Length: 380
Ligand SMILES: Cc1ncc(COP(=O)(O)O)c(C=O)c1O
Image (cartoon, rainbow, N blue to C red):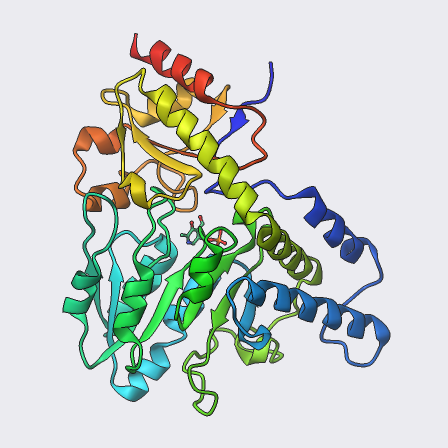
């Protein structure tokens, strides 16, 4: 029997063989610690890491020195949020605004800060799955330290109006962070124009390796000390914000993935749009709801409910033919109703029957027919 078609690109994308080729040299070549100043191997590694840093920065129109390598978007979100706590304490800004549909890698550090005396407010979302900038505006206060709103939701693919939200705090002492794990390398012009202070990115959502990401820490004013403080202490790497030996091969892989994304994002997008249009057309044959405002959705994602079909049963019944998911892969090993769909005010049936399908240009074949057959079989 053939392998199931992988349709869970929002959880992780396949590693691009071209990225792997570049990484392989660093795994198989001479030992290379980019912090070794005393020999040529260290210097070469440092040059490679700095080249990768510039490639990563380019995609968000940041300066290379604004890119801090981390282990992924989870760590970047933690560094952005927890790393601002000391600045909040020192300046008396202990109010944070975020949204009810953030990834757990944002919600959990916020819960932690709530226990430490910070006041956290989560903006609601519309049934279309997006935050209204007016809701954020209504929550802002003179003591607001941070507004953190994701660029696109991982479960629904719905883009958030981050540009308008960032504009609300520009020129104030409130910082703006966006978790761009799902949009970095995909929504390229939008992220380049976004006046965000902090941007979290992940390598394994853009055909890069797992275990590497970055936090972009933009400096509004070169003379003012960076407000983000490190969570780890050690050798001072990454401008002291993220000490520890840099994984050269992973950094180089992220750089190459960023370079390829820069060249290929328009073609990847066109291919995703074509698959989406075909899927939407084929789904007409069965009863379904699309969750989230389709006009605001990333082109490679569909969150869809099939009324009366429990998503867990669906995933079990179809696991040999398609690999899809419900909810977020990164959240839990057991099923809990999606906090995102619940926040959107969907009915219990819609929430319980929701499936996330996400794809990319490298899917092995068009999955529409298999999907329809699976739904028809399960409905009998
Ligand atoms: C929106 C969002 N934030 C954060 C993460 C965590 O990213 P990483 O796996 O790089 O830690 C994910 C991964 O699914 C995500 O989709």
